[in-house]
Image 1 (cartoon, rainbow, N blue to C red):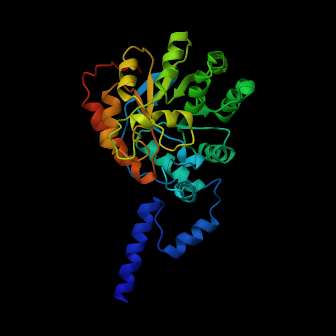
Image 2: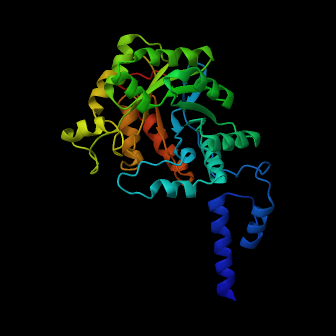
Image 3: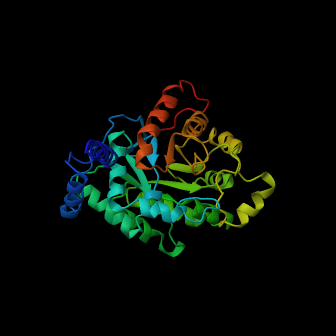
Length: 329
């Protein structure tokens, strides 16, 4: 009996810590509670940490320097040649786990996340989260057809977005096609709706061309990380990457070029892919991005990573007294 009692106590504590739910007396009671609780009215999970994050300002938005990525909603994960990772992500991130992760973000000072509001399940979860008292704001990562730019922006506004960014693949594609007019239409449509607006891109020429054209985006969202992890593409493979967007190892092909160019840009810079989809440790990825000029970092996070990521980012930011590129937000 002693072994069974100890085992039960261990399982009780493990479940309570992992799920961050109110105290319960047994796993059986937790199971019943889960069945009886109405998901639409259940309280948010109690967060475990009370850390804070410094913020920067873009237009009307005050944004934590660490931004929660949208893979937890979209169910897509860069996985190189591992074919099961996206399905694993989808299985892990139930609606409740998504909301629990956002609650952990808020408890740790991460006040902004990014996702595509055209994902109806994700939008439903966000609506439910806000109804429960969640306050995390979001930037809509939009992937519009050229003929429906205004409609995509309006959809983001109706969903409650406070900002919009043209998704990186679309920004790269339209610049490669020489269609800067569509990018300008996207910016103008977002501003007309009162949104803070940015342009995303993996390729350096994307933002260089937009800057040269004088398009009045509020910020740029550009990939940044070192290429010293073992699955990184070699320079002689870059043409293959550019020509085939289906290759799942397409992050930042010219980090130093991006760093040098952004020194000349007087707009806020949100860096993404900073951990190369988990290939780079946050201590290295955050330091590289923030020390080389990024004003914010977007990072996909599991709930159990949020607290550590915030601690790491805070330590790095506090240690950056004199960056070569000044803070632009």
